[in-house]
Length: 414
Image (cartoon, rainbow, N blue to C red; front, side, top):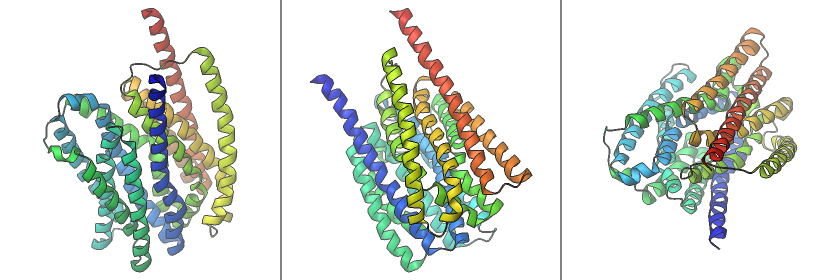
């Protein structure tokens, strides 16, 4: 019975996490992005995608790593609650830095024309997403995944209100302002992290680990968010719209990987090692290979059908890019899962090294295929595939090496 309870809790939490993540992701990919694409011209839709990805890049670069470090420091903050003040100080600091970066990028994409109301709306989107994504880590710290589900239901309800406001007023930012205002209100009500105060007193080891993870996250997510940010100024807003249409359904692969990564990290923070006997490793490898073929085939067919349904205006131009983008995202997904294990059991600097290789390969590919050979959108897609595939192989190597070392250490101890 005790063993059954130990298994049941993570499974239930995984279901909560999956549903919670699926709701806003599904709403974004199948409702919001197609709605905005239908309301805007191809060029303006490309501008929206570039700006929104600038916001999401800053959140993934500065906020998500901080929330993951806070999760990893769960025991330390329980032993010394005043440590929360240092984390809150870091949050305010990096949020201010994110706002500055988004303002500069906004000015760049707006052609260095300062539109006060547009900039205010853009910064509001950033601040709401940043505050929500950081303070909602309390639900993962306390393993209250039911609250994460409620939180995300409220975000989707806010999205629906925002769609109505955009339809009336024409500003895409209102969708995300409404969605994250709903989610943040619930998070602030249920979480007490923000109530602990602020103090400029942070452990050097924590800052060092955060900086390493932040750099790694930024480098690792560069091909996810920077693709649209680079495509827009280099080959135009229409190409951004076509690329988004080709990638929309394959991005839903994160519906599986992100909840799994979140629950996996939440539970292994208390573990000293993870072991799999030889027979189980072989079975797991067979399941992974078979599952990969099934996933690729299923997502490819879904991409064709749903791209035509959601983005009929871009389908003919997007169809040729779908297989390449889907394969790249598959490599990215597997690398992300393995890096959760390495985050817990390897030095954080390894996250930086592997991600650095990925971004260098990506930028090299863009330079050669787009700047030198002028391959257009296909050049970007091939650059992403090159970066993600090599990145996965490197991460797989370090994962296998770590598992082997821990297995040998266990044999020596016994």
